[in-house]
Image (cartoon, rainbow, N blue to C red):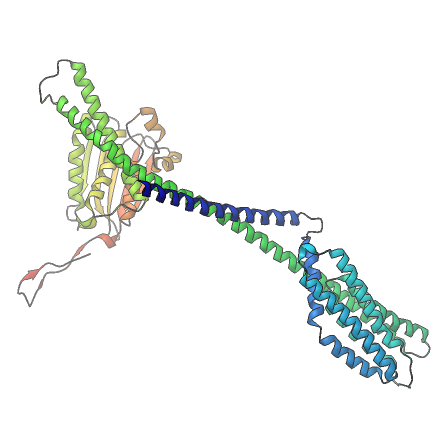
Amino acid sequence: MAGAQSVRRSKENDSRGINSKRAARRRAVLRTVHDVREQLNTTNGYRPSFQHELTMMYAKNRTSASLAIPLLLLIVGAVSTLWATPLHTLSWIAAAFVAHLVMLMLARKFEDLPQEDLDLSSWKRRFFVGDLFSGIIWASILLLPTQKDVAYLAEFHFAIMLIVVAVSTMLCFTLPASTWAGTLPISAVVIGTAVLNAENMDMTLSLLAVGSMFFFLMLANRLYRSTLAMLNFRMEKDFLIAELEQAKAISDESRRQAEEANTAKSRFLATMSHELRTPLNAILGFSEIMQNEVLGPLPNDKYREYVGDINSSGSHLLNLINEILDLSRIEAGRYKLNEEAVTLSYVAEDCENLLRLRARNKDVTIRLELDLNLPKLWADERAMRQVMLNLLTNAVKFTPPGGEITLLVKPTEDGGQYIQVKDTGPGIPEDEIPTVLSAFGQGSLAIQSAEDGSGLGLSIVQALVQMHDGEFDLKSTLRVGTTVTATFPPSRVMDVLPIHQDRNQGRIQLKRAI
């Protein structure tokens, strides 16, 4: 006993641990969804974390160009020796290299710091000042004292300006202010030089400088907006994924609860089946003995009436229990078919014999239309008998006195077989047919007439027909009658092959194929 209790406690603890993990996961998903929804409601339509991502992209661009920028410095410095002295050139290269190292250190430090410890406004100001300082240094190369006469000095300055503006655009486009800080100084120097020396310089080159600057600034703006759009699309994708995760968590929880409920239902039905059948057998047996007065006559007519009521009520309750158990086994996939060769016409005759007396007491006629030459059907005979009995019982129940019920067993056009029950009852309203076909569903006529029944008969018939790969159909017309058809496919019809001589045994065998 102690061992069983410890095992039960261990299972309960495991279940609590699993449930707590599921709850923590759901809370994390809900926090994500809440955060994303808040971010979607911002005025500019972008998440606040976009600013961090944009600044991080800027820092990564800086670090990725850690070797390219020094190489560019050396190339531009080498070109500047065409008009400047080596000392001035080396001084400029040293200053530019120091500015590059400062920006590289800032970018790497920004990448290493956790997001919660970052003050984005402060860091963006630092990057802006650093880019402005670097832009001024790059512009200063155009102001170095000219020691030699160079024929194409203006063209060299223009080329250097294009290189600096292009590089600044590609590195700083995620921070628009830094883009302006890196490009404006050298552009201003080129344009200012052109204005001051307007008489000695070609104005076409000056206009190209201005146009190039605005072109690269527009390109930077377009790249910035494209990056924002990309981040926004990614945010929407994350939002959808979070919603799907939440829906999946809810679905998993619902499925788990449904499985637990189904297990509890099966356990309950298994227990109650035994607990209810045992006393019901005693009730039915003893009431039948008393009703037939096996041990002697009952002294009071009321007792006989009560005994009859007890027996009929017990029989009704037993049938209800059997139907519920059958439907439960079918829904759980535990109803196993005992398939064999079945002649539907013989089954139909047996079912008509069972219900003939009940129909006669109600003044209802049952008419059979059977094709006795039909080949056998590969099916569960008990299931076929239950299908016909349920359909005939419903027809007898709702057909008024003087009415007629027709039971047909015929072949279909494609080689299959069908069972059909037609009655001349009051019919079923079209809007009530789905209710009648559902489990425990009853139409208005059944409720008004207070007919005995659980509403499970047609549900069980549908399930049994589907288990035989068949189709179920119900058609009804008010004040005309109801027609119910169960059709079975040709694949379940057994064809008889010709007789042939067995050469080895010397005897005749009849081969049947399914």
